[in-house]
Length: 306
Figure (cartoon, rainbow, N blue to C red):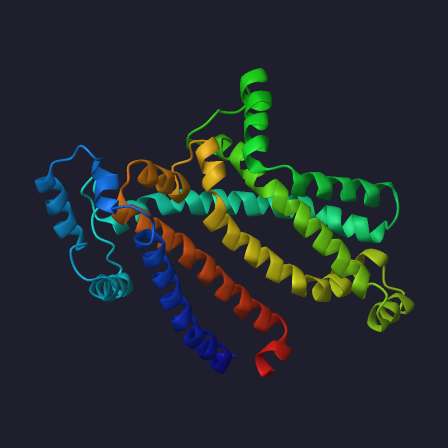
């Protein structure tokens, strides 16, 4: 397992370098002068030149790239133009809120997808199975930017049960967590059902039944253990998507996470902040994928030996 871990960490180095390069190119290849975009066309030439020197944009592109890579590995993304605070400090202050929302969405996803997927496989081609298929279709089809306002209108405006937006107590997490987790629950429900149907007729399952074990024990203790291997991978990938793709949901509910920080930085043309947010979001996805690979290798030794 240690060799497998070292190998995966070694492969992470070029991935981090590639992510850093893409973040650098995305910002620098946008048409137009980023300094003028930040200050506006009516800015004084002295202010434009001062900001260009401050950001190092007056240097050759290869020098800028080298400094960006070195600063990235040091965790230094510069200072925010609008607040003059270190970018990494601002992001660190917003990251716990995004993690909290992602964990809430994961809980919603698991509470819905696991029992529904198991029942759907156990009751194949019944009303329950057909209902889960309809739920999966609706969950995948409904976008967050439509579901979020719909939940706000229903539970906040009409019923007055939950807060409209912002981050407060546990009740403020319910609507954004449902909005973010419902689509993933639909995907995982279909994955759990499909994985269980693949293993439910295997020889070791038939043997367990022949020994007289209760059907619930056969499903939970024997079938799920093997059926969960592909599910773990999908859950890990979806968790990475939560950390990197909660921008729409955070914007709808005014959740003070990295997603809303990214939108604010783009609107304010805060060049260093945009770079820092994009890099952190990308690295969250990369790190979660690495953790998923390690967990999968732990659960299935064949992966480590290949």
